Image 1 (cartoon, one colour):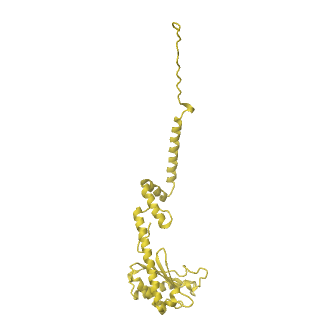
Image 2 (image 1 turned 120 degrees about the horizontal axis):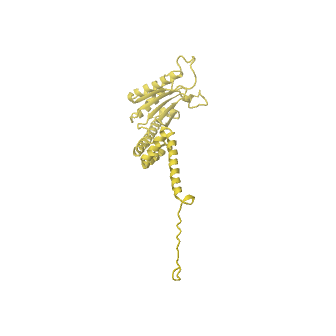
Image 3 (image 1 turned 120 degrees about the vertical axis):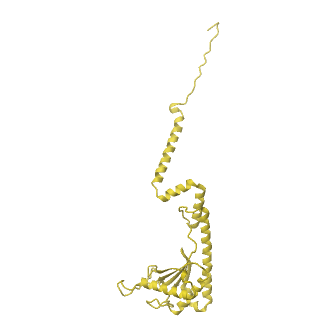
Length: 261
C-alpha cells in the first residue's frame, strides 16, 4: 500500500479448449471416418463386375443424363440396365417400336378382316392365331381334328392350306418387313431310331413348302429371312404332346426397328 491506498490486482483467467474437453479432435476424426468410408466404397467398386463399374462411372460423369437414361429404360421394360445410348436416342427407339407395334396390330386386323370376308376360310378362322411377340407379329396356322394342313407324315400341303397361305402372303406384300417361317410337329415319332428322317426334317420341309406357296402367291423371296424347323420342341399343348394343335406353321413378321437398349 502507498499513502493508505490499496493496490488492486486483476487476474484474468483464459479458458483454452484443449485436451479431451476441446473440439479440434472431432474435426480430425470426422475427416478420418470420411476418408475410410471413401476407401471402402472404392474397394467395393473394384470388387464388382464390369457392368456395375460402368454404371457407377456413368453416374459420376453425367448424373442428370444417367438419370434420364434410366427412366427411359424403365419405361421400356420395367427393368434397369446399363445406358448404351443417349437418353434421347433410347426414347426415340422406344417411340419407333411403339409405332411399329401399332402398324403390325393394324396389319393383324386387316388380315383377319380379309379372311373373314372370304367364305373359303370361314371354317379355318378358329385355326389361325395372331399375336405380337418379341420378334414381331406371329401368325400361327394350327391343325385340328376337323382340318389338317398337311398330309399325314409328309410336307405336302392340302389345297385349302395352300389357299390360306397364299392369301396371307398377299396381305404381307403391303409391308417390307422381313419374315420368318417356322414348322412345328407333334410328338409322334417316325419308326426309326432317330438316324433317318425325323420330325426335325419334317418340320423344316413343311416350313419350306409354306415358303414356296407364299412366294408363288406374290411374296418376294428376298423377304424371307429365316426358315426354321422345331419338330416337337415348341409344343403349344405341353399336356398332350400328340394334340393336333402342336402341328402348325408359324409366320413371323419381324420388327423392322432395332430393339431399344
